[in-house]
Length: 215
Image 1 (cartoon, rainbow, N blue to C red):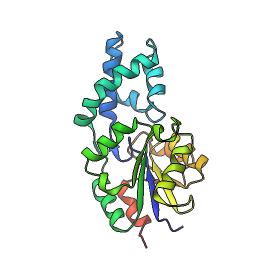
Image 2 (image 1 turned 120 degrees about the horizontal axis):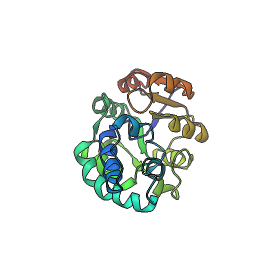
Image 3 (image 1 turned 180 degrees about the horizontal axis):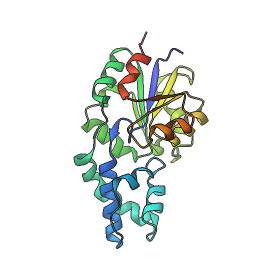
């Protein structure tokens, strides 16, 4: 299948943001008298949106209140504790050079994602950086964000691939009618990744360079 476009998840796919997410989650937990959690425990709850994350990991607090406290902390923590996933710094520029049209589709608050994409030096390679706010506050696994991503890059569902790192990415892509690849190293291990039914599992992000040769 010949692709001309790619849509990407952000947390765990393009960026290793788990330390920052864990830091902000534990900040909120501490405010409510809860002990901090290890990153591995927080990691498995990432991907379905902040509401779900805090509802599960800070169960003693009203979600709306927790979100305000989390975001106040996270706007600083994310800039100091987020880094690119291995292979991203080399792969994304090369895909752009080959002519691929690309967009980011993340459940993270879109202003945070856009700020991080800029801070990590990737903003010039993406046609759009999208979040739930861009599609009527419908987070993944609702397919609206991927449909909007396709519109922004000017591609049909048969011309693009969605790249993520966890089961919610597979569910979202299937709902949107896109092929989906999962990259190991984010939230999913190899068995988890294979079990949720992606079209392909990539051991390394840079494997995309051999799979997307360009026109």
